[in-house]
Length: 482
Image 1 (cartoon, rainbow, N blue to C red):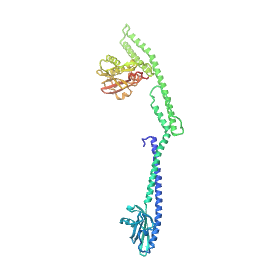
Image 2: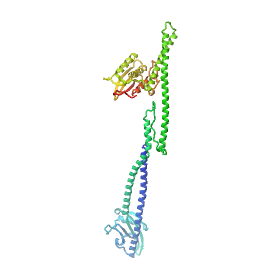
Image 3: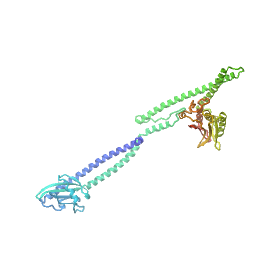
Image 4: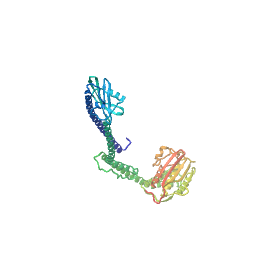
């Protein structure tokens, strides 16, 4: 029951309570009714016993007459038995036709065991059924006589059985009615709680991870005095605080993005100037000391690296803001051929394989950004794997999607690094041999470009088999939504 819904448990509880009450009331009613029937029968039995004793006593100690004579005024089924000094003298019962019938030896034996205490007792007489019997002792001139009378319990038992059937039928109907009404009442009572659940479900389905979030969902405040109403009010307060927190987070992210974009833009000019002066100093006519020449070379190298980092930060800021994307038809097969050709020139020590379908696949997007994403994946494989590694670029199709796959047979990516692999400034230097500088933004740019095109990028890796899958929606005549 603990796994059932609250409504189900309430309905089952109501039905169980009604069942217990019906059983208790029915049991008491049946017991009281049966007791009254037996008490009435006992009164009739004692009256019959008095008449039989009087009839036997009128014989002045002579042998009793027939069974009809010793059961004056008794109806069908009445039993009479007279014993003298413990031995049966006359006994039998009146049949349904009014004629006397003989008792069997077994029935005589059962009746002979009834104590002569003038109190009613219940005995079972086989085919005759259950009887209430009373034995009355009499002192006569011929000895001690015991007169026994009995009346059948069949009518009382039949009445009790009919009463039980009636109560059972009424109780079953009451249980069904309680179940139906309980379901309706519980459903109406829990309707506010259902609205709370529906509101929480709708909120849980909202994209709260990024961007501006407006939580317009609220629980209707129509029963604030009830427990469920207080739960709804508490949820509304929680949603209000969450909305305020998300708004503050979004504003903070926007300020950070503007700062990154502005800072990156402002850094481009001084970095270009530094690189230009370093190149100018190295190209002067006069020979420079070795340490100065090395310093200028390092300044030029680091300024180029800083320029690359600034450009990548600006690109990420523009992608986060949903700008800087063209919308045109892009043939992925041709794009992949160009990217692999460039990678082959940049990494001649690797083996580059290309697998394309028979027909080219097109998507709607920004060709330059998609070329940059594929180039970053190929560069990632080239930089972080040793020479001799085979890198395979493959174009696949799925229902509604095109998949660009970059796989290599290098040393793989550690499992603890995979969850943060596409985060910014995440590096895998300890896992795969690093022989060139890395900003830690390459895969983050791939993920941002994929998201901007309505797709995603995933990775699976083990030693000897690493695979990046860039999934994009195929062209259907409409541009993907930003």
